[in-house]
Image 1 (cartoon, rainbow, N blue to C red):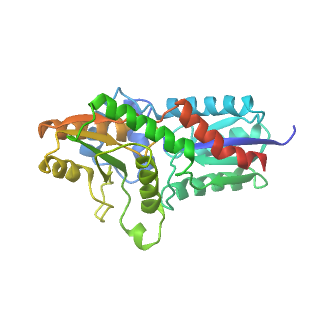
Image 2: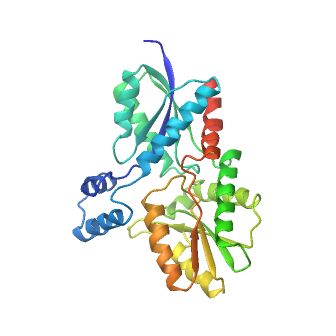
Image 3: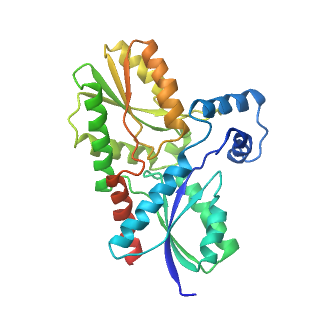
Length: 305
């Protein structure tokens, strides 16, 4: 079988049914026992967003669209999907790729901003699978793509849509958000906060905004301090400042999943509406044409080399 080059999209993963939630959480928690109250809470969250995570379906659509885009531009390469915490696990996908004769992988994590704690973990799992399955396989990682022009324009276009839906005026506050990580990464020199700031600033240069702020959301349940400010605290502050409309732009995420569909669309919406704020959320990139072009532009140089 001839040598082949392929693209591997890496994403977090999510349960595909309520019955999967317990096993999924065990994987996320590295096998640590799950308190029953916590399990029931997370199961209820997934019930509220339709009984499963849509992340795999969306990532498969992204992969199919990227594969077609590459083929249309004379760079045919299969595009695979591997998940960190649920099926198809990264290892399962690397097994599939090796069986198909893939000898070179361009791996792209569906998180544009790099952190050793998040993107680094995907890289470690992918390398571990390579060492076990085929040590001669070459893997090239795209570490970050947070300023890729088509990605920035995709975020900007989605923001324009959100503002139009809200009837943008001086009563509107835009709140950019991203997943929080433990605060200790700052002392470790992690680029995550800086790259988030750069992404936000690049989008702001393309969209006329009144008030815009930034906050972290979806922090983990541990005793250590997490990056702030917290989105819930910022929502209260914006209300106190006199704003009447709130538009959340979860710019640290590129696809709908529980952090978007529950944390933003349910938890923060309820909080905002209880305060009397009109609430809106900027659409996710998902498999929009501009976003797929950003993936294409990101990987094509690695494929041609």
